[in-house]
Amino acid sequence: MNHMSSLNDMLMNLDGALNAGKLSLAIELGTSLVGQHPDSQHGWLSFSEACRLSGDTQKARDAAEKAWLLQPVALFAIAQYARCLIPYADHRLISRLINDAISIEADNEWAFGTLASCAVAIDEWTVALQLYERLLGSNPANPHYRYMQGLALSVLGESDQALEALEKIRQDPDFVGRVLNLIQDIDPGKISQQELEKAIASQRPRASNDAVYALQALGRLHHAHRSFTDAFSCWQRANDLKCATVKYRPDEWQVFADQIMKLIEPGGRSDTRPELVDKAPIFIVGLPRSGTTLLERILVNSGKVAALGELRDFEVLLQMHQGLPVTPMPFAIKRDAVERLDWQLIGKAYQDRIASRDASSRRPCDKNPFNFLFSGLILSAMPEAQIIHIKKHPMDAGLGNFRHIFAAAAPWSYRLDDIAHFYSLYEKVMAYWAAMFPDQIYQIYYDDLVSAPPAQSEKLFEWLNLPWKEDVLNTSGRGGIVRSASANQVRAPIHKQSVQVWRNYVPELTPLHDALVRAGIIQTQE
Image (cartoon, rainbow, N blue to C red; front, side, top):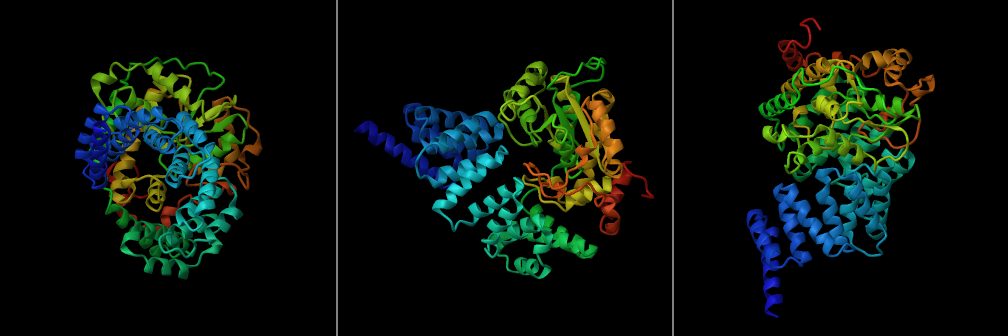
């Protein structure tokens, strides 16, 4: 009795500290509790959550695993373990946990809601849709579940069903902005300026994130009507709201990029291009909003390439093999640990991880644009890999990022000066890797690709040793999953509507233009 009384008191104190947001105290209490009561699943789960909220991804994952191992069929433990694996991008294990949970006949809204979010995080949209529809079966009035159902259907190419789902929450005061934004993305003709302005005017302070979506949509509408000053004003207001919560730290990013480049010094690699192997991975890199999804779509149409989406696996492995907890970029680089890294082992680990995403004989394609930072490291780990660098005009790339809402925080994209700094960093890094690996990095310009698709794509396919036929350029109306913010746009025919768009915004983009001129990236007269 004394043992149980002591455990219950400790659990009560731990959960009390956790609920009060006293994370340091909760971690201290949790450490003591699981040390004295290692068979307490409740204790491990609460300790795991305290570590997760404090940003210690490694301790959170390890504690959640211990809780799960104590009772692998407990839904709460399955869900907690799965979400603690998200920073580690562990597709194989997260998929296993989700599938185990789906087979359990139980009612646990928190667990299934968490697992649905995990399915989205690993781009398993079919499974995510199944889970959100299961949640709607017991809670049909929940606007978040309904919105995610609509988003999943949109990603899966089921536009009519997506619109039907979204119409049910079109007037929801906390979701109206993102709902209208997604409806507009699917079918621009279904949204009016008056409706968007009303949604923005009615936003409550706590719904500022939703206002960002409405402002972005209104900006797109003004752009379509060629009211460019009004369009830019909307995007500026949206970015001002985002800047209030997240700041870009250029010095940290500069140090990070410099450290990454120093990991592979000139002269420290072989100049011999390796022979291609059957499943040699393809990486598409560049800045976001520069045509990576269009290029992926063209490659996939060959039937020889599997689209894996935008994977974080390489950056995760780089941290794990240093013995570090996984954190978002820019993350720590331990020079002494990096010097001991086995690049071949990292390459094999990457190939093992992505095998769970596609078991076919097709070549895997990872189109995470931010892999540009790691291009040289990727080629050191997987010499057989091929990297395609797609590049857009700096001004169009800058505008494209400024006016877009990213799923994850992208603080470098909220201010024009920050975009100029990040673009300069990107140019420097890619120039370094391209000079070091000239035969394994292929550069293609977006403007050239959309202006002469057959010639440009045929040349690229020859470099990739893939069979080319004109049908690969047929992106219009094709179904299937598109794991990208460009999911709906990229299903349209190839067009030149995104070329030289920046010239409509010359006055507004002067700070970006001047900063890029000072950096030597563009000429004064451009």
